[in-house]
Image (cartoon, rainbow over all chains, first blue to last red; front, side):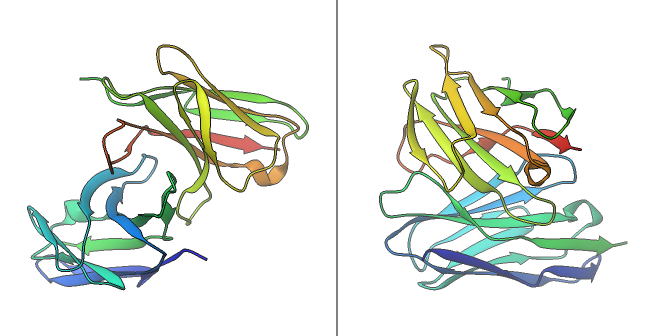
Length: 110
Length: 113
């Protein structure tokens, strides 16, 4: 069964303290791994798509990487406005649906 | 450029009632997917519509049904509401391009009492 697991569930950092969020997946025939950011009361906002192991993508203070079993979302020198829940999802095989992790709630304290 | 819009934003219903949620996709998108998100969880796939047909369905009962109109907008209908149907219902649109990312609306918060 296709499965996505994110860790940690919650992460509290001081402003400027870099860290990484993990997304491990078990799927047959990965077509794409997606990272989204979700603010309270809002829908998920698209960040990155990764397609194959070794691929990396960056956007401002965020960098996403992909291996054959997991993806990391690295956040460098975060600011309070980076506080949000970060969701990871995969698309596999012939499926149109995305399989989602439960998310990591990131809190950046000033 | 208007993004995905959903209505209403909030809704309170009683067990056994029926509800209709509406979604207008982002300009240029022709595919609409519906997801249910419980508090503290990731979204769960309900179904996807393309060319006015249900293309794929997740593990949801037949009480959940949908429709896509010629202008690509969509509706989600839920019959015989249960307390467990209380959740955030998200609509997402995408294009037919390979691995086109989903763009989400801000959802409809449904509370069943």
